[in-house]
Amino acid sequence: MVGAKLDPKATAAQPDGLISAFGAALGQATLTAPQAQFAAQAQEDWSAEELPGFDPADIAHALVEFWRFGESACEPLCIRVRPAVRADGTDLKSDLLEIVQPDRPFLVDSIMGAIAEQGFSVRAMF
View 1 (cartoon, rainbow, N blue to C red):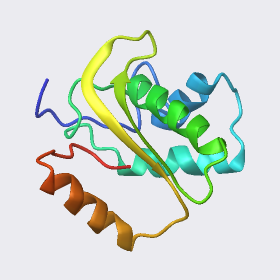
View 2 (cartoon, rainbow, N blue to C red):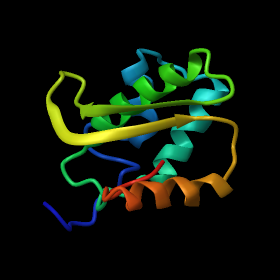
View 3 (cartoon, one colour):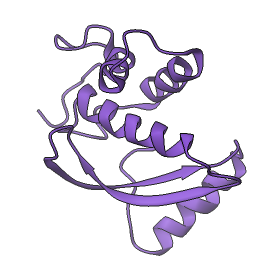
């Protein structure tokens, strides 16, 4: 239900929330420390109200693809735009902008401004 208060940290299907969904999507029973930190940060950032129709498995699938993209040789910066899809390939009718770089929070405002200038809206940011 759009507008309903949802807790992304736990659902009946994923009682440990996004972190366990990320591990399942990776096909790993145990996450490495960097993977667990990445999933925990995404879980903290995720607001289900911003992404109605996306469940933890959808977000986890997107995060796994992003994690794998980040593991590739991306020095000093990698950027891509791709369609958001469920694990089964169903189109979620959204696009994902993925940026891998060293942590530089001041660039977030610049990137968000450039996106807005082009007439696009941001539904969520992780």
